[in-house]
Structure formats: structure tokens, C-alpha cells
Image (cartoon, rainbow, N blue to C red; front, side, top):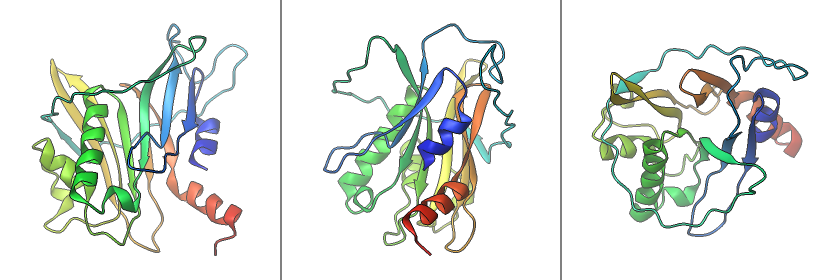
Length: 217
């Protein structure tokens, strides 16, 4: 449902694809890509294209200079050469297996840190209430960052978007963090496609449509 919503939101040349992997390895749950073509000065509408509503993201709930770790990555990624694509954003849906063991939590945090280090916007949606670990809090600890909004006992459920940008040659990270509560509406997250361009991810409408489709009351 998130992908279906993004299809209606993303302007050309961006597109979203889902990814599911059951097992001990991990991959991006929802990725946003862009075709490597010349940037258009105006992404809201192109000649003969579909107009996209302008979205003005709110101010970040936190801005800091992170200490992102160096990561050795060994992987094979195969892309269609007819679609020269580059990953610009990732939406991670936390599963119970991401939080049940220390090594699983470390792997998830390292994955997110690596994406951020490569200037990829990352959104984390964690609705796993059976485990009290907060992976966002662990990420902040790993990059030597502090988010006062986490409090002394970080909640187990939350949604957050993180993106890196440069400010006076310093690499900064902006965070949009929202604690979640059962029975309360889900927040809207900004998804940054470029440093100065974002679209909105309406989590509540995606959740409502999922419940309707699966006939969950």
C-alpha cells in the first residue's frame, strides 16, 4: 500500500519498488529511485507529464552532525542497464526479527548508518510492540548523537525519517521523529528525493487502506 501511494505521489523520473526477503539477510523494504537523466528545474509538472502537488515538509525535530561509521560492504547488485538508476531513499518496515537479538539489532543499525553515509534518505517505521528495543535510539548511540525526544525510556513504537545534507562543508543529519501510540493516528513523514525536494508519506492512509483491503477491523 505504501508503494501504491508513492506511485501517486512521486514525480518523474522517480519510481518506487517493494522488496521482501524472508531469512537472516536483509534488504530495503521500499526503495525510491531516480533515472539518471538531466534534472528538471521544475519537478511539479513537465510538458505532457502529470502534475504533482507541491509538498512543504515541516522543520526537522532535530538537526545534528553525526559520526557515521565506515562500513565494509560486500554485495552484488544487478540493475537493468536500460534504466540507469540510483537509490535515493529507503523505507524500512521493522519486523520482530530485527529486534529480537543483539546481532540483528546491530545489523539493522549498521544498514541504516551505511545508507545515511551514502546520502540516502531513510525512513523507519516500527510498530513492533512485543519488543521494547528502540532501533532509532540505538542508531543515535552508534553515531554519537542525542535526541532529547527519546527520553529516558525510548518507546518501542515510532516512525522517523533521517536524511543527511551539507552545511558549510559539514555533513549534517536532519531527523523527523514521531513516537507512536496504539489507537492514535500514524504521522506523515517527509521522503527526501533531493536535498531541496521531498514528497510526503501518509502512513495513516496507507494503514487504513491496508486494513480495508485485508478486511481488518
